Image 1: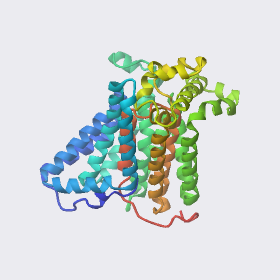
Image 2: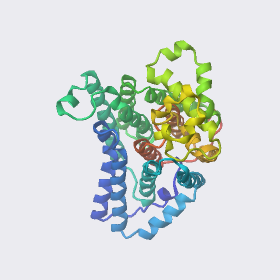
Image 3: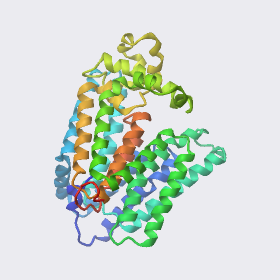
Image 4: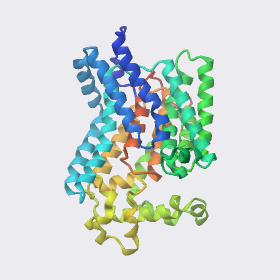
Amino acid sequence: MTASPAAAAAPAYPEPARVRRLRLAGEACLVLLPILMWLANRSAPLLLGLGAAAYLAAVLAAGEGRALAGRLRALLGTPPALALGCFLFWALLSIGWSHDRPGSLRAYGELVLPLGFALLIAASGRFRPSPGFWRALALALILAGAMMVVELASGLSQRAALGTGKLMGFVFNRPMIVLMVLVLPTVQALWSRPGAALADRGLAVICVLVVTFCVFRSESEAAKLGLAVAWACWLGAALLPRLSRITVATAFVATMAIAPAIGPLADKALPKAVVTSFDEMSSRARIDIWQSFGEVATARPVTGTGFGSAASMQNNRVVAEVSHEHRAMLAAGHPHDMPLQSWVETGLVGATLLTVAGLLALRGLAGLSARDLAPRLALFAGAFSVATVGHGAWQGWWIAALALAVLLFTHDIRPGPERDGDG
């Protein structure tokens, strides 16, 4: 989430018309992503991939293939990328002991492809979002959120008339989480961009209000939690940047470390009134799932059961080592907790590598001014909050949304002191 070598090396000379058209096509794909997620809630990797193809075509049309390769090497050589690369290598190896290797390979592709698409866009040197791009993206977020709220208010009558999709409010949970993730870099760019017009700041305020309203009108408890944590972290980091970064890092490490025990801890620590205040899947059943998969993590503590194996854990031999009362929930599809899923599938090795990658990313934020640190730390904290209670860890739409948000944060970074009170 810091300035990338690719961004720093972006060419500043005028573009040929063909290259410019291809770049604009790539930008259009990124802008349309939240709207298409409203229509098809797994479509984010497709739009990100089409955008990457357009940027790649622009690079090749400009004859900058060698420069692209150099920028790719520079990006892959950064400490967070090296740590993440080690995790991806270990995850690939772990497929060898998965009970469902074809399913594990599909899950691996869902993780790797969006990361590759975002990496390609960053390394293209052509991703230089203009004020018009940020305005269009803000309007896309507002429009997508408004359409989802209208559908929810009407009982999804529009979707029923079209005869498409499931007629259940939870179909908007994924796109709401995408709005929650993308609103952070969008608002930061509109508000803090040097020379930002008053109209842009007004659009930023409208975008914040609309997205917040839409998220809290949705059925996604994960999106609500993530957005609340993100706004709180943004405010805290703006006022006390160093303390906020240390707090987030400590919470991140602690959550990763205790993941195998999160089920029993939640069962004992959460008051019954809190559990019953949420719907069944958001409370009691989720705690039961954490307990079930926690027993799997304890049974295979070092290597895990293999990347992507959680999707059909009920068919794994490890079931015999899980207590009888917790076996049924192993058919849930995933643990609904990313740290726990990393432990279950890749063991201590994988969880440690992910923790190191996250800490290195946080370390990379240390040299930023409070203005630039706050929204990036908010993304980290908010997204990690969603990951600890939400969907499967490696789902392509989620990885694509995160990758795009990080990509959007590679613009306009200025170093500065991080002393508390400087913000």
